Length: 511
Image (tube, rainbow, N blue to C red; front, side, top):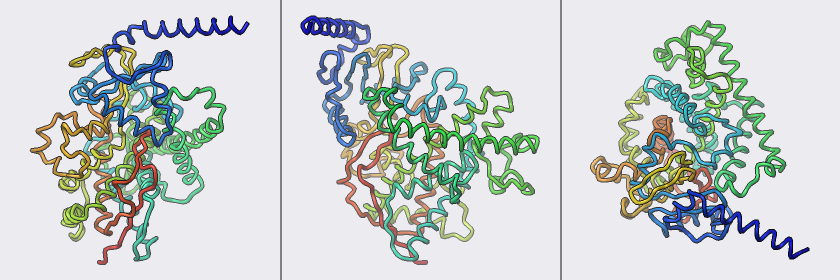
């Protein structure tokens, strides 16, 4: 009996192995280098590490098999691209725009919004949302971002009471980037301590604690097992809170526009950014992305309330955690490099020391040194350290053919630290982004906001927000490091972040 079972299992696994290696995808990918795999399970054991060690494993594998390699498990094949010329082919493709299997784990929250959709739906939503980041709309958002930056500074001053104060950067900054995106996306504030606001804020925090670990290593999880687990039940509860909050805000906003016969949706670009929808209106909220989506739905675009909810939730997810992480590393670098800190402070004070100054878009665009520092920080610590696509068509690279049915991973972190394009890659040097130095490099050597058709639609928004936060902080505080940044270990889930919290000391600048 035992022998019969053993022979049966052996025959089954042998047949499964033959099916796997005989597939067109596997036959073509056989030409690529990569770590040796075992029958059926492929490279599973190579990446069977805890989250803290997994990022280091990826980095070492990237270095060993540069500029391209493959890994696989069962019927899942992944090709890792590390050279800008290969990455450029993928980024410029108008066909291979589908996100890979890893993104399925954020779909319960975001459904198929701009981050997770593909094909005709993605193209349609991108077209609807692009005007939300036009200059005439961004100027409204900059007003809100300015107010949040002031609120951040006032919070620090209140807590420190005139004395230096040490803060956990991620915890502190996430609160304010979430405030900012909530007000610009939904037109509602989370600054208050109402029960609904606190419940929503906690749900966002708890949800981000569940999602990232699943998305990095999708083959380690069964959806059925997860749904029945304590985390699965928690996710269901959190989704009810998150979606309920968004739907409530959408309903309130639509009701206002219905009561005013939609008159504030007709010429959105002409609304004064400092006065909300109307000087004589009791409705004092400023223009939000939600209003543009409502206007689009009323103007015949195919987007219903659920579609609006998808996109609002997508921007809530994508628009605060990435920005807060970018600020964590940027402020830590600024604290470490005193000469850089002083030079940024001089640049922003040239405006902020003026009487009745205004931090408008044209003013922010003149902070050129600060912008170079932001870019160099994003090079060293890209918030989104990898992107993945699923090929729906064959893709011909310079040396290899990558067949349809393959997952393709772009290692942005490795790309940004490649000594072939970035001499002394671990050194912080903002002058790498002087125009004359930029012109010497392939444009796809630096892609913190992705690139091509699926680049980040909110990258200008993010840059303005980071500039405003840093400008207000450095105008009011000296920064000193607490931990040694060079010794900080990184963890690479969806978002790159330090394993242990980073702290800074904020020392008030006496007027």
